[in-house]
Image (cartoon, rainbow, N blue to C red):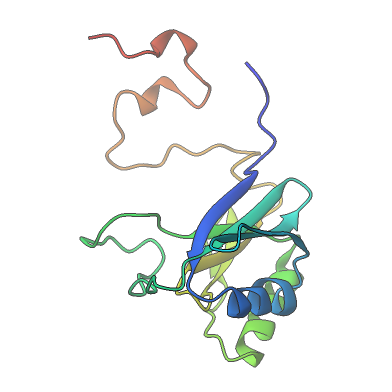
Length: 170
């Protein structure tokens, strides 16, 4: 089986590419790698890190979703929960929190999940964002977790891929 290198890109939607560029490129400091479009549709790409990008399609007639806080269940139409972007350390996490707040964006306090620390915010499109850094010696990559209180049999088969289990037998 091949090795994955991370999320190549996550494609999201904006109703205003300019405000999106200002936030992702100018406020967060991510390089805009591509600005593509055919005159009617456009898609812009921003570099999060060496192996990961986020892109936005501009659809001016779209409306921003109602803000749904990170990890809180909803009965609204399902798209995704949030985008989690890794940062180097707690110092960078604190810097981003201050940067967001100084630019008028609300940012959560630093949340200690035990294996990583996070700050939560929303971009101008109401997209929930989590900035996170692993706790050395406790990260999920170092110590995989199985802590679901209602874990199912398939999950109990373990962390590693189970190649003999797919496709599902009928």
